[in-house]
Amino acid sequence: MHMPPEMAVSADPYGQPTIAVDWTSRPNYAAIPQSRVTDDQRRTMRWTDVHMGPLTWQILDRAAFHALTSILRDVHRTAVVVCLDGGKHRADPTADDYVPTQQPMQ
Amino acid sequence: MTPMSTWTLDITGQSHRTIIGTAANAAASRAAALRAIGTANAAAGFQHHRYEAAVDGELLAIIQTGIDEEGLPDHRGVVDLFDRIANATQDDPII
View 1 (cartoon, rainbow over the protein chains, first blue to last red):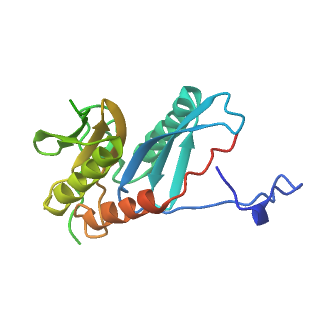
View 2: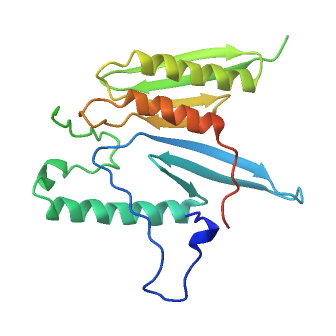
């Protein structure tokens, strides 16, 4: 994650800056393949920008993708167990036939 | 024969449809595909569309409509996403 310079890592392991994002509903997202030639013209860098709410994820390779989705999968499983309405959101969001749970109008 | 560029847009929601178009070059195809997403988004109503656009067989973007505070498809958020994509400079990934 790209951190602003003024939030540089502190020597205190318990004093690290944190960013918290609250998502109360399913966000829009856009996945955009990116590429650029390095300054020395020797290779082409490729990565994927995933724009999601206030965040932009930059996924550099498959290892990063699998690591990220594994973390998010664990978060989902935990939320299903912990949240009172977790059972309604049990469906695997990574499945091809996944349909978001329709939230009631407020 | 002048080479043409082809763009496609797959729209998935309650139904699935594909839009195919041509343009003079890849940049024009990219612009046309993004305009098509904007048009489809404006007419999406209560559908949570997923848009998958490609230019000359190369993936351009995957965009998924989210849910707003009222529980309705967040079409306004998709428009904001377009602004971010269109105005963002291409930041190098942190390696």
